[in-house]
Length: 404
Image (tube, rainbow, N blue to C red; front, side, top):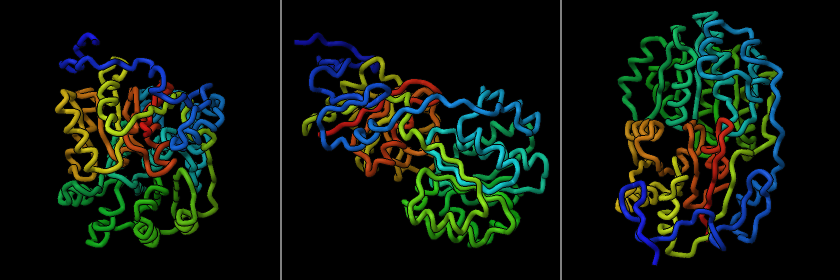
């Protein structure tokens, strides 16, 4: 009999064995840096594919943020954020965007593309206060996060924004737009509502960003995006960011940009800082295994992904019953609930966040130690975006995927 041990969550672990090193057959191989061999498990196709990717050498930037021809106040804000050397996409894309060129950015999550397009936009507005920019993002969380980064980079520059997303007060957004903000950030559904109600007019927006276009197309917003493009003025500067370009995405692309510069930083779909591990489970044991992992001390800040909103809600209740303090975000939670949950997770009010793929893309949360795929994602691309929540900012992370 194992001696009962009190976990850091304040309740005994019921004598369960801790799987500190995933001993024996409890785990099947690693796919992190220098650990590309996997054992068995035909159903672990996502990890197998990720394991085959060659690791890229560390990128050496040609520019520094200090060398870009941007406002001194903006340089100061960038330095205050702790940024010194640009990432690959920032190094290659900021210069052409400062010159006013249209740009296609092919970039995976976690590459720093948000800063890559925000810095030139802020600089353009700082130099010409009549400039206005529209940024379209696929999810509420990503739109909110873009606005948070915008506020940080534009601190003290008197550049104002409005966030137009579903699940939030339409009256508040109407009021924000009446203040004539420099930048509007929104999701397709709410932007379409505002346009049809004539609350928003795109006639004066000379800089347009479509972010995570492949996801917008995947979740059914292709016609809305085409509608926005039909309303845009000409000439304009069009900035297009997507992880992939399939035939439907290409339809949007062809109507959107003119003589663009193309920047691709897709040489490394999986982060070299993420060790990927397949955890073999038998039917009926997944919850016990998850419990045994979460009580370990090294599982400091964890994101657990499920497939459906009902499944995530059920999992949250089960973990709370076991004494864990958790948060959950999914489509049935209101926008204010989702934002509050994310804020509390970022501020370490709890250390286990359960989510559907609504949180798989774009969210920048510091110090996530582990990502657990409690249920397999729909696609390899979804897998890559999920595990991209850890191993960020040159820190190490671990991604675990449960397979039966």
